[in-house]
Image (cartoon, rainbow, N blue to C red; front, side, top):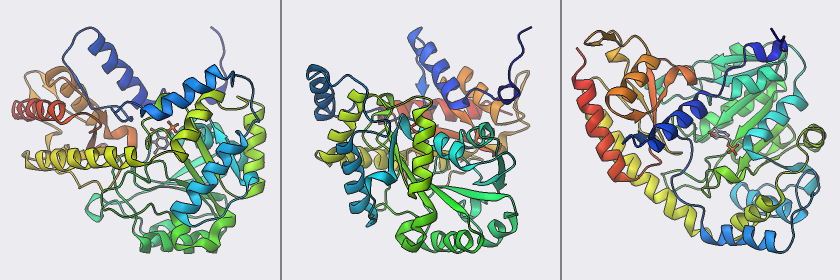
Length: 398
Ligand code: PLP
């Protein structure tokens, strides 16, 4: 048999992308299925953004661009970060990549030597551990408690820091929990990071999708003096319903960004030229579309959390942002339907797919087997029908 590299032997496919593909396949076959597994807005990309891409094609903007992105887009990123976070960056501190995911990948490649540790709060986005591991790094998991709103305990964080700890990843609003860190938590993390010389990787991809009406916030909002060790990651996928366009970016210390740019220059080169023009239109154009989509997510959030919490044995902390409901269904672990036993979150999501025609993601993918993640980036009618089927399916478990 063909021998593959060690680094891929334990590399698993992204569970969310796999389930989403399976759900899309079933739907294409005509199965009436609620796909609540996807990490993407159901809305179409706004028209003015699409037009910018069409214009880019017509204008022949179809060649290589600078590796790190076109200057206009870097300036637009700088302007957006200045407005949202009152931070000042120079173009040398910005790298535009093929999605926020590639930004994170480049950071790990630029930052980590084999054996270097990265602290990842649990529950975590599915791709953080493999991104760290592919760079030779070692994830160190920081447990949190659902009852405490998945908040970071600064003492627990500090206890996890060792001589090889290089960085911590923050994601607020969070995928999968929807939790938003308080300013006090961010300040406490900043103190630990400063005391131990940690780099803070702040994944702000959901920063504009929050439901408390407050402006975006990250660790630099409370600790601007930490800018020389904070790298911000963001993108247009979630905010502007542009998941397929693949544009994300980072902003951070120049040495790190330059190194990450070299990684990108020797792997994928520039992000797609046409999508860069679309992202430029997204960042500089009218922002009402963001408010409109966020208002819709909020209405759905209200609906789904109310309905989930009304189900016997189900608890779902109220998400403050993003578009995921992370529900504790562990009260059903050990239950049966006929000869089918529900032993864990994976068995639960399989059961829901077969018996409730709901595609969802097992909590084990995010590091907490008690939970199931339901994306509510679907219209209310779909959510209503799905919740009715969920209720019936759970009711059949004994
Ligand atoms: N970070 C988090 C927490 C996410 O949920 C995602 C997408 O699912 C990303 C980053 C990356 O998104 P993209 O690569 O589309 O910019």
